[in-house]
Image (tube, rainbow, N blue to C red):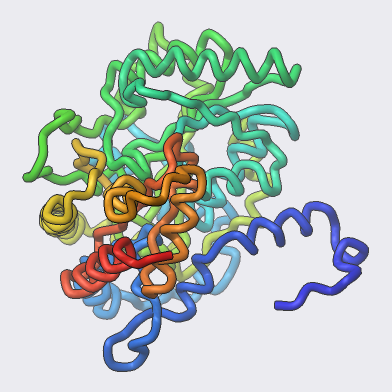
Length: 439
């Protein structure tokens, strides 16, 4: 798209910032030109976008045999925060799977058109423009625009160095980042965002670490936001056990008495990842004790209204315990198998990767180290990630760059392995071919 010479005169500064951010995101160009061996052999093989397609056949079979839309879903129904039926269905479903210390009630839920909207909402609600939200590295890259692009909140990234970000010791790193920000910027930090299970590292936070983070939030009166969009995508790691995989325990499962003011704890969940349905655009904010948040978000719910079709379809799915139990079991089995295959391939090519995964769809791999082994005459670490990305795109394979995920070391990338086996094989082959190319 050609930008006009007087672009800054016809749109706001906010719109200019959004345009600049979009220009750096290759994802949409890739997704509009996807590889198919028969119809589009010159397209991109995409293992950079967090989608799980392993269970699409099962999900579509359910949808296409069950969906019959009542007329009320063509109206505004029960309002912008989700139908009463949907909130009941989500509450009953998550009570069974997240084991909350206080059972969920429909009144605890605010439905939105996806978890990205939910993240933007809580950022807007908890922090004024310029105030901070803590986010540990590496992070899901889209957290940055979700929290800052329109709410104008400042994302305060947390460096860990050689400290395990899932350890008790890491909590001190969050506190130091908070103090540094408040001292240098003169503005408050208002919240801490946790991705649990983690994107891109594929690990779960131990219960004692979550509690320690809650203590930190209580000390500084911060909101703890636990994004648990991968809560049910936890599977058996059959190939490596170091560090030992940690079982998933929701922040909701912790009795908050004596730990943190319950008004400060919030959980996000949605249909995109656990049910492989990014296109449904259905997310939920769970806040069990903060009436002020509910009242504030009720006022802007019109701008994140989930469609009636998504509302109805999600209700149908979550009300069917037999189907969802079977779906979750099979999904976990398939994710475990895809992870094992990808790891074996990575190991056979002597590529370093982050071990101990047991959740979500990701391998966090050090392609920079492998590239330097193959090209020992090149010494510039600073641009190795950009160089590898260009080589990957030449081979028409798309991975997510660690540079956009706040990686503390150059050359790391995220591979999404939740793809059909033949697709994953093609992606990994192109990736290793790209590493051997000369720049």
